[in-house]
Amino acid sequence: MKDILYAPWRDEYIKSHDVEGCVFCHISQNEPLDEELHVLYRDEFCFLVMNKYPYTPGHFMIIPHKHTDKLEDLEPEVWLHMSTLAQKGVRLLKEGINAHGVNIGMNLGSAGGAGIAEHIHMHLVPRWERDTNFITSIANNRVYSTDFLKIYKKIKSLIPKYI
Image (spheres, rainbow, N blue to C red):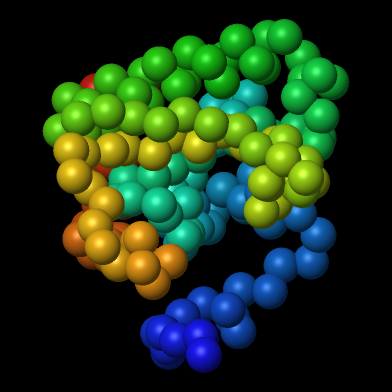
């Protein structure tokens, strides 16, 4: 028998945020909704957005405005810009929210593990010593130790200093 954890607070999000087409293009094209969509930063090439289903508190993504599922088709200028944002983002996470380390990753294509395979994106996942516990191992779930909006506001407040 498989145990099920019920999370009724997610119903509102799931039911009210249907986006036709690519969710990342929706975010890219709707700057007036940045606060609602938890965008941290945007410029001519990319935007930074909090991961709605984070691995750890402070998990955000770097996403190019260009819709593509092929890293190899991304303009070198945009790729280099994403890399620069990743460096700055790592510093922000380490110094700004005291992460002990950071995982950086891209899952390319559904076979590569991408949840949103149609639009490439890079994950920055802050990590702390002993940030996993038994519930991850035995129940395939995570305990999120802080309020999502609180950490979003904290990181957003640090953007001018680090990005």
